[in-house]
Amino acid sequence: MTTLQDEVTIPAGRVKLDGNLIVPDDAQGVVLFVHGSGSSRHSPRNRFVAQTLNHAGLATLLFDLLTPEEESVDIHTREHRFDIGLLAERLGFATDWILQEPAGRGLRIGYFGSSTGGGAALVAAATRPDDVSAVVSRGGRPDLAGAALGKVRAPTLLIVGGDDDVVIGMNREAMAQMRCEVQLELIPGATHLFEEPGTLESVAKLASEWFRKHLASNPERAS
Image 1: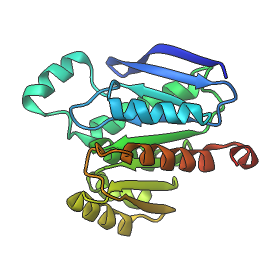
Image 2: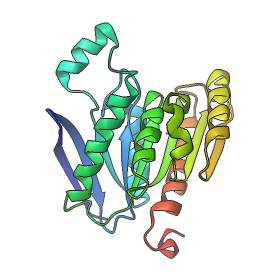
Image 3: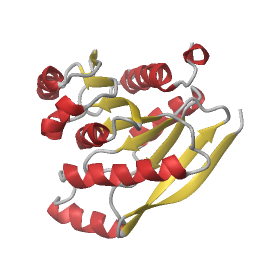
Image 4: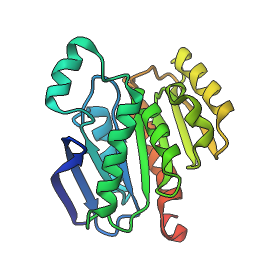
């Protein structure tokens, strides 16, 4: 398998965002990663999941939701990390970019959101029903998507640690408001960050299966 790997710059209104695009040969789709609060495209957990998706024939785009200047402010004020509207808007810019990028053109799009990024992914998906074909949330905060939950059309997989009690409740409540295909998977023995042995591997496997099922242009090729 040969793979295109690129450092990319994504125009996002008045700012530009740094990213990493990996496109395997014969990619079945492309997954945009939406990291959680206080994180970045260098998140080791998201990078691990991205590698699993690459091996499964899926392209991945990991990018920073904030500029370095915004990050330096956010470290002290936390004013951006919970601004779901801003994060969803940045994801929208990244979606527009990948739709026009030659390496990603023609590929169906999925979102993988973590923590607060899970809420942002659902808000962005709700505004782009024709562009987003699947969403996966890892330890996500879908409750932060608010009224957008009922507008999501993309099949959505919510993955939560089996020992992450508070977030389990948030995800169950969010499911009740959603009208799309939605599934909740609890990873036994996992806490919020999936640091326990084997738990992140379980997340990556579930995400890979979900995206291959819903992003493959030819479902027979995903089997």
